[in-house]
Image (cartoon, rainbow, N blue to C red):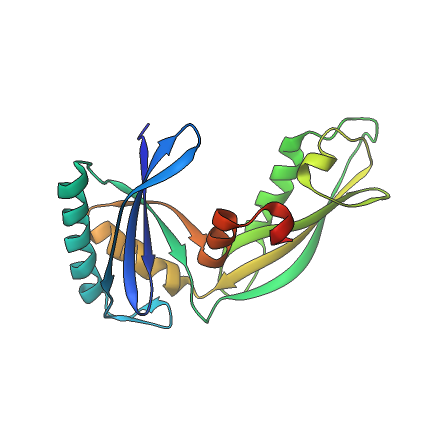
Length: 199
């Protein structure tokens, strides 16, 4: 497993690339570079050739200066075309005396990516969970409880598939693999806020 992670942010004003080294106390940013972007408007890549040219140069520079071979990247998803909707889902248990494992909560959340929306779901953000009459808990509160119905309350963020597909093509054309994409506002919140602050 690689001991570093590479993140790319495609913004309307600049393209940013950061390399973070995995340490026992978290991630240490060992390289950061940004270039003025062209071919991007309102967070959406419109001229893939222009963006690819800029990104190729940044990757080459980062590799030479860090001695690391970049093969996988994480990228953010942003833009004014990102929409959201709130929804609720239930998992009715056949045995109310059975302890609810964390895996059941994760499965209920992950299944929301299959919801029908007008576009592609980029992020499913859990808001809270209920188990029968116990209302408004987090995953760690509910795992280990007993009950007949597990209910999840979610906020789904979605948008045009083109926003994601253009990023994936540019990254692939640069010889890289897109390991993961994450909604940029959520990534920023997780990086600098505590859970209580995010709520």
